[in-house]
Length: 86
Image: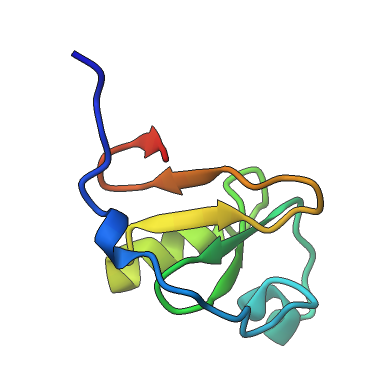
């Protein structure tokens, strides 16, 4: 049986808090590889291919389960809790 995400009710219509890049990397004057947008609060964090992995750290700190790619031309979403693309 295919696995399904049980956290779709956490998705909100959010505005990116830092549309210019990863919030923490900007504060640290650091770099990132790709960006992820938290669909619960609008936090923009860097992906797990980035050295700081701020999107995953944001999930662990807040338990906000669903991130969306914040890369131009991409619209996929990932649920950290269910470990599935939604």
